[in-house]
Amino acid sequence: MTKKIMTKLLAVLLGVALLPLAACGGSTATTPAPQTEAAKPTTAAGTEQETTSAEGDSVVNVGVTNKLSTFNPLLLDATEVAKYAQGLSFLPLVELDSKLNFVPMLASSVETEDNITFTVKLDEKAVWSDGVPVTSDDVIWFILNLMSETMSNSSFSTFYMFKGFDDETGMVPDGTTEVEGLVRVDEKTVQFVAKMPLSLETFQNTFIRYILPLPKHVLGEMTPEELKTSTWFNQPEVVSGPYRMTEIDPAHYVSYVANDKYFRGRPKIDRLNIRVRTPSQILSGLKSGEIDFVQNTMAAVPQEDFAAIEALDNVNVAFDNPVTSNIIFINTKKIPDVKMRRAMLMAIDRQQLVDGLLLGNGEIADGFLTSASPYNDGSLEPVAYDPEAAKELMAQVDWDASRVLDFKVNSGDQTFVNGANVIAAQLAEIGIKVQVTPLDLDTLLADASNHDCDMMAVQYTLAPVDPFPDIEWLVAYGEDSWTCYDNPEVTRLLGLTQQATREELTQHYMAIDRIMQEEVPIINTYVLGSFGASAKRLQNAQASVYGFFNQVETWELVP
Image (cartoon, rainbow, N blue to C red):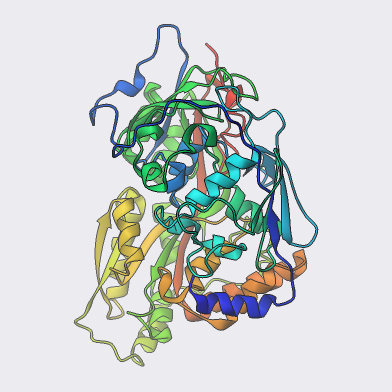
């Protein structure tokens, strides 16, 4: 976030206190120093070694449709699959459950009295797999390395909100051992201290849900540069979660073995694999038993396969809340005319896309709030498809009809690739030429960050309980965001959400969605009906948008 945005937020939030983070105590136990060579797969790409197991071991395979970008929690990006893949070995402090409640993982409680200081108590029983307690020192050491200048993890730039972190980047100098905003109260208590008020929901969802502490007693002697390149993360010796990673090939799979010393109880499933497949392979994988579990946000299952999967006699299907939208992010610097962006919105027949691509398993919304959001009061009617009105608006726009817009989309989502071509045809009808370019997810996000496109579309899941951080990043960062959009009123409303009642939250977020509908920095093409599936032989496993791995240790295979 830029200092300009920071200044605006501080002006809105002036006079309200922020949260302190209490640091945790550490252990003096030592282990051999990890390797520090550049990380690389431990097996040859394309092999199927992820299915191997000791004789008699139980094995569960989770199917995903995007490659795994990183296995180092210090390099965690914004993708769901990376968070959950890492979280199996390194637990977050808290997680959402299927009912959108925050539940403890490494933490046992999270409290604040002033929305400035947040006290996080760690589970007294939480230990690393070598028996050493998980402490507040692990949490603080992890965060200071996560936000080190060498790590440069832009996904966590919102740490600028805490005392002691850079006002613009959220970073700290390499080698920093303490900051004002992280306070070690005792061995199991950490306080976070903020520069401005934060709601408890934002603190939990934006920050500590993505904090996956690492064992300081194992890695504490390494520099940020060594941590950034270490191969230790490919096969970590010490973990806090239910499973330990054993083999990885980012484009194809990651394999795990049960943590015998997991403090919540040894998992009943001996080995677990995350297997990367194309969307078209999910149906056949579930049918053959090659895939046992498909989660709602980590696999883009083709809509045309829903009925066939539901018909399988070996699979349970689960539809969950519509929280994932396929959003078109418009580069407002390259398409600055609001009339043109509104014409684009009116020219896209979104209901046709829902009916044709999603087979009716979805909904239309303008802005960020879906029907699953507790802040959506239902008063905002989506803009209707009206190509004639769109043409009238385009007649008022100074636009070079020969120019071709570069529209980049995720090649891993074939459903939307098809939809993007429909959208291009509909925009052509009002005089806007569009070239659709499918890219793998990593390249797509890199190009969007570099503003190397006119439009970009990707599936985006906003936690219904706290849309604040995503809205802020997407439409309040100006040129630092994908949209390059900057509106002082949006920034003001976002600031107010951090000290608002539930009724006020509804008012503020609905006002933001009305601005999105009017100025169109984004087009919420459609909201997907969330689809997941699990093998009937897999007990205690329920596919859902949130919480599906929270009690993975209870999963069990039955004949």
